[in-house]
Amino acid sequence: MKLKLEISPDLVALMRAEIAAGEKAVSAAMRAAGADLKSAWRGQITGAGLGTRLGNSIRLATWPKSSDSLNAAALVWSNAPVIIGAHDTGPLIRSRDGFWLAIPTPAAGNSVKGGRITPAEWERRTGLRLRFIYRRRGPSLLVAEGRLNSKGRAVASKSRTGRGVATVPIFLLVPQVRLRKRLDLARDAERAAEGVPGMIVANWAAGKP
Image (tube, rainbow, N blue to C red):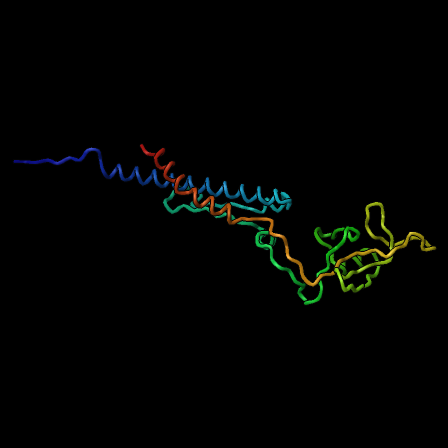
């Protein structure tokens, strides 16, 4: 007696197809989750009034880049981690030298490099000297003798008689300041992670032969 056993369909082929479907499902889910998180973080940053430039510092990379894998992964990060981290945690900021933090008033203007101007740069740019005024209540001041131009910036007076010259507060001096928390990146990251299993299952079911 001769017996012949045949298994139909081919189990090996079925397993290979199942693994391929799983690889596609996991990779697609990670790409979608990464893209959603990048979009959510950028939306948070621009919505908080921090600008599109800082929002565009959020980047996304997925692995593998040119194939599918059950171990696919996505990484979302910022090219400006210090700035993003500060707005995400709301830290207490103190002066590096232990004295004062100089907060520019509107009369100080902006730095030529962009961002917040320093007292040293302000003196170099205007040619005016800053004078310290201590106040027991409220922030102390750095002031200058000058005038305000049409843009509200303090500049040197050209008047020989002293007409229009005033003592203008240029910087507020405080020992420390707490940066207001404006972002909650962990919230969006947790939401993206929680959605991954469901996306894998949906993609896997849709990709089965």
